[in-house]
Amino acid sequence: MKICHLTSVHPADDIRIFVKECRSLAFAGHDVYLIAPNTENKIIDGVKVVGVSSTASNRYTRMFAAARSVYQAAIEVDADVYHFHDPELMTIGLLLKKRGKKVIYDVHEDVPEQVLSKQWIPKLFRKNISVAVRKMEKYAARRFDAVVTATPTITKRFETYNSNTVTVHNFPILKELMGNPSVKEIDKRKENSFLYIGGITALRGIKEMVSAIEVLNGQGLNGELVLAGKFAPEQLEQEMKQQNGWRHVDHKGWLSRSEVKDVLHQSTAGLVLIRPEPRYMVSYPIKLFEYMAAGLPSIASNFPLWEDFVIGNRCGLCVDPLDPNAVADAMRWIMEHPEEAKQMGENGRKAVIEKYNWEKESQELVALYERLAMADNRSLKWGEQADEGMDFKSRGVKTVGNRNH
Image (cartoon, rainbow, N blue to C red):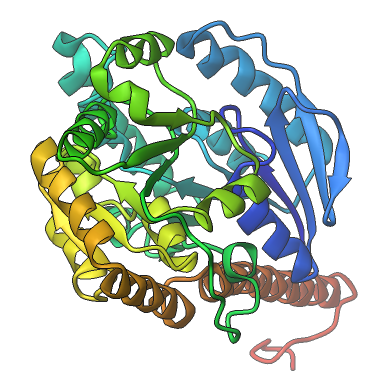
């Protein structure tokens, strides 16, 4: 099949969209295109990347100007299936459906819940916008050929709109972070380095992490907090640099995937201390599974779902993410119990090999496309049979049931 993935928001090298989904579909033999903003036209790992310019200066212009550019490029590609990744492209998906194309909506997050905590949306309007987005998703999803979601919680809602809804978890690629999973690697890790990877925001716990590393060092332990990611908003970085704990922070900025692998293998434990927002409490944090894949013990928020992953697989500790002292105590325990911490890392790696990996998830994605292709073939055969029947009548051939038979 000729497949075209669409995004007006994510970069062309997005991990879920390009590295995982597009490459997996290309490897399965499909002709895969990816339309993404502000990138050059190129072919990478069999995926044809089509760049569209986006001069959008804010979220509102992006929703219209960038989406229009993506739509124009999508028409030129003329694919069999369009697979889009941003809620602002729902209207584009509906327009493509009107053109007779198959369309898949990939839902990365629970957008109506997400809207309720968006700082850039005035609080007075959030509830009404959330309701409007939910209604739009319901209307559009019923008309699409399939919906792909990142978590079972999101799937549960979309299944009520579209029976062809599948969960494709955003789990790590085994080969990317751990090499040959059959070989036990002995990593030379630091004894005091606590790593956070990802976007750095208040909701993702940066203030508590900096406070915790200050508490830890105040106890006479020489610990460091390593940050790999960008601050949002930018002024938050300046605010954090004013904190006493910042002198124990190594901010590496944005890292490439190979650099991420290196820093993972140099760290003592991974941190995923998101604040208890409703949408986060039912999410599947990719960084947690990346820590596990790299053999790192984790210190995670004590959400019930996350405790199932961390405590259930004996691969880390769960604490109150709003309590820097509790976070510091967990760091101290990791430092003072190196053998137990090492075993936690091995347990996490084993769980990823057996359950939480992209190699398994990609099979679900490829199977969805196979079902769409089979449906196309059945429609084509039915159409051919209908044409033949019409042709018989045009030639005057008598059919069963005709009184002159």
